[in-house]
Image (tube, rainbow, N blue to C red; front, top):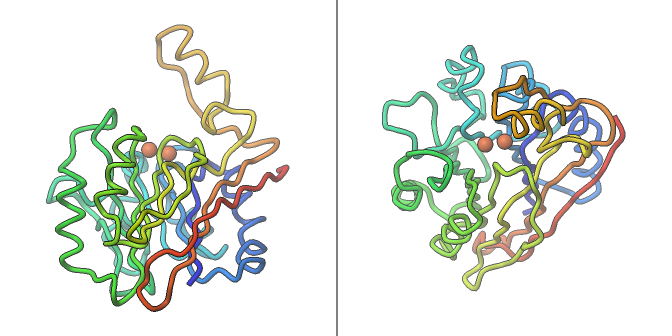
Length: 259
Ligand SMILES: [Fe+2]
Ligand SMILES: [Fe+2]
């Protein structure tokens, strides 16, 4: 099976790049299943039903998220709808709306976790991964993990912790693609960060002025996505062994497109 995992999509420019590029990438590599990090899809902060539908229509199967999933309050109720394939990190407190993994309704199991180093206080992603893997089974279908975390060390640790128990552990959240794709000894594909789908001339997908002024003045400035110019499309392609659902290869698929 061929699985494409796309990094954090930032605002309208990112969505336009996905709409333009994804159908041809699916065709070119004969991709069976696509995930996308959607936490910044709607004007940089959170998701809306419209932006989710737009991405599903472009060929995305499951949308994962992270700390920004709560930014558009009107979307929170949709996290409860089992027909909408959007998940949020599973290691939020117990009564948090939404679900942290998809398995029954999908040909690929997808788990969403969030890190604790420089991100926030959450339950242990390691314990929650263990718990979740008591309910879903790698011998039945591939299982992939989006670990939404800041520290590369924490991401590497989770990769090694889950080696052989899931098909892939990929990092998201930093918006910076990393060049460390590898298959761990027991068959789990790993990369520290997928990167983003967002503007080349930006600070992590945001317009330079607002983000830069935060650093210069130490005060809050309005941040919005850069929607024009060249967009970077960052993703990885994971190929699985149909006999055991482990990974046989992981490679970066990175493109640029002028919007
Ligand atoms: Fe993000
Ligand atoms: Fe994030």
